[in-house]
Image (tube, rainbow, N blue to C red):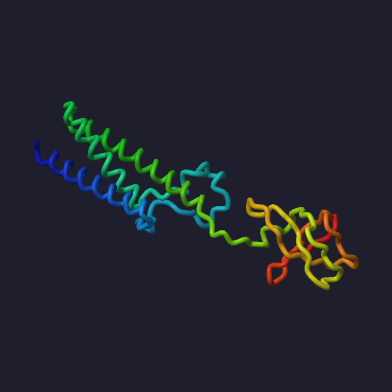
Length: 192
């Protein structure tokens, strides 16, 4: 082995061991959080990424710990394998860089998919404004008290306290439109 192959082998072994440790730590709940963000994130000031043809790709984080580790690990092992064939060192490096870049992109897509699955679990009643709901508990007239409505908000079925400004109570089973939210999160409704 020449010096270049030894360096590649050391990088490949180190990144493989570190990736294995990272995976084991993640499985037991001590995972490293990818906070480093230099290659993606949101583009502030851009109203619609669709206008630029960059919907999903521009939002990816390529320079994350996992992405760099995947690039170095798979790129090094691939370059070593190509040199063992034997291929010219330039072609072997190019193939290794391409494989590493594909691994980095795959990790970026995977991380984005994982981040999309995270939810705080908190229901923001402001997201229900404009939606149609069904009265679950009678809503007293003129905000004399709160009733309850059932509505699909934030991709889940929720029961929310509701009031109305109408002069008559809204009975159970009536369909209503949510027109606003007060300062404590109670929705304001009107009869359909």
